[in-house]
Length: 290
Length: 310
Image (cartoon, rainbow over all chains, first blue to last red; front, side, top):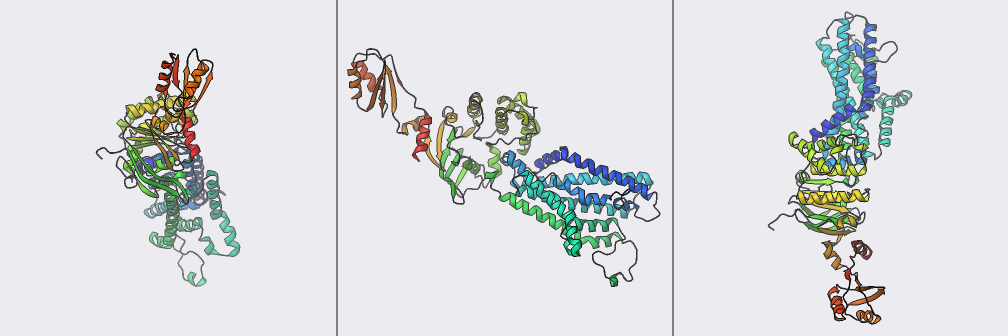
């Protein structure tokens, strides 16, 4: 598509050069590194304990600190929508979108490139921090991750990218819907708060686990927990009958994958639906207003 | 037609729900022409340009830019036309040079060529000294210039300028208009200048179209527009030895509506240009006027006349 590449490069460099990026980048990397350090300290050198010592890096927090998984679930969504919540409406109010659209580019190149740039930004960030964590652990333990561990970490990474893409798409949607940047920022934060925290406050008194599945945060939480925790054999409400005779062994990778298959597809579908809505909205927007 | 028209519209219409923004517009502009589109805010000027650029879909009718349909070949049309919107649309956190570079990239202009064009464009608009200053720090006038440079780097066959003089001081305005005239004449670019200020288009445009409520109510050169209005000619004659009889005789001349005298100056109002008749009259009376001058009727009045008519 004409122009997608050029717009993508500009958006990506804008993202990576922005102050908001470096602020969150610093927080996430600092937390990630601190947690790894804590996890390494806590675990000591316990390669013999289990085969999945590298996975534990992501689920065990340092003294009292939450785990890295927690950071990705609750904090990283900020990184997802912080670039996109004003990406369209700001360009409309400053008139730059009109200028770009009067160049020989397709209209959808703009929104595609902006979405892809958001996804690329979070991917780069996540790859960086996870690789550094694994690298530190390799150094501390003087041992290499097994193939299974590498596979699980990569799938965890992939899941995280999909999960954060959901937030990228959500920010994009709000930037298309709302004229004012302040409104779209508040809307993004409201949805983030709801899915990350309030949904539990509603679901737990109601004792409704189905309600939780409305939240992409919860879906991602379950899926990634299964990925970095091979001992999880079953999800959702468990009956005694089901537990009877169950072997307390870690699951092989493909079995864990089967367990979270629906989670992964749900996340991908949700992301695509949100993106599709913003795409259609953007394409139908009267250019007069742009 | 042997020559392709730069812009051609045929019954071009745009409706927003019940509101008709552009109403069956028929317009032909020849290549190289500097065309001024005049009209109050909301007359449909910008909408017309958006349709010509393929950014807004016409409700009915057709338009062509150098023979290309903006809706079938939007990329083709956009690559041969440049557009400076009312809000200039430069990235404030980038320098003029970076802004222009982005435009050349979107236009797939090769790097070497782009570098040269950016330099030339910034020089020709007189913004070369600010190439490395962030746009956010530039004055309104300088931004306009950079915006125009953004149009120039594309080397367009047709350029649209939407209210380019808005918010400029008189001096800046004149410089900018002169720049547009130069672009039109030197680069052989077809220029469409949109404005609600008559003074903008009056002196530089080859032809002017006055647009009101979506319709082109008048079209032609300034002289043609003048001839078409009902306003009187006002002729001042300065002469010595003016007698009341002379004034009286003058007022009985064919076509004269009124004659006023103040000191040595007689002011004649007439429907038509009767300067030769007046001259003859004076010569017959053996008086040689010191001066005879038709007051240039300001187009502003003509424009306002059109506005009043509707």
